[in-house]
Length: 422
Image (tube, rainbow, N blue to C red; front, side):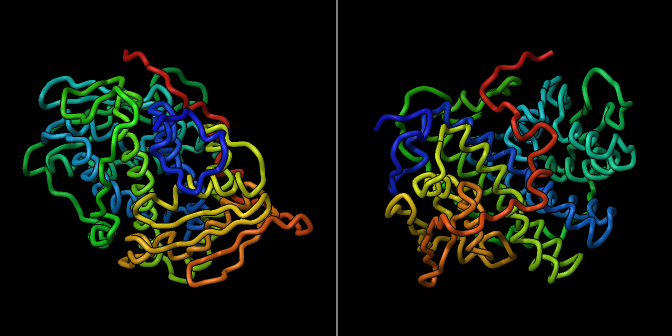
């Protein structure tokens, strides 16, 4: 099987990620990492409106501390990252969905066995918050201090409970500033300083099938690239540096990592705010994210049009419908009609805490982001027919959709580039 740099050709109901080239898979991985930004932008306004601005700090702590230790451990196993010092921790940060490549332009330096450094010449998250808050120092402090101090350390603890992220400098910054947005030391502390407070969401999410689900490493359909990351840290690492089957698995892994993040987020809302809030906002959450995801994936993989063929392709690529973890199939009948059927998989029976799959018909938001006149009708227990009705009133985008991919993210360039470390 030859690989392609895009999905421009005909729709194939048997299409899989293995069809993509290494370069296309690397781009897709970055697109899935940046979904973590869409997630928070589409969720936190609901939390703030219902429970107040301070609740967003607790929410951020709970969701990231409930997910990042799990997916960090998963990525270390998948990639063969061994060790318990700063080098292993920095390598793990390079695969953290909370640090999407380029949009959060992390740079890394291993100083010695006990000290590592990371810094951000550009931070899209900070830049965006400065824009929407008019650089409000309190809101910037919430993100860059209160939401990072505990979450960074929770992630580092997977590698070694004695590791700490210590800020050298960080925002708030003046309206006009030059230089790095922030700089941090990753260092070992004494045993007496290593005690951390726990996070209830972590214990719950760790019991989910998502936490232990294993993706198989498939066949190689394109030569070249590394098959693991067991060697020394590569400060200017690109995902393009990895082998084809590793990238196929990593694309699936990043989508599952987002699932873990959303599980932790939904658990925190249920526990700390109210169950009825999640019943109201979970469908809206996905509706607000979908236009941004569809827009970016269409551009990344050269997918054009607004007919059923295009809808079917986007459903095959929908990051919420994680390959292997969820078993489903999309078929096209003609340019206006098709069907999506869910057969099962660990993701559909993963009921330890709520996830996007508790609202299985949420795929409609992806379809309607391609064509707002698409409607779905459930015709079986887990089967929906899809139909583009030219006479139907088009569905309007969710009111948070513009916020989700604002601040430059709508057109942010995630194509390959090698950065120089300074």
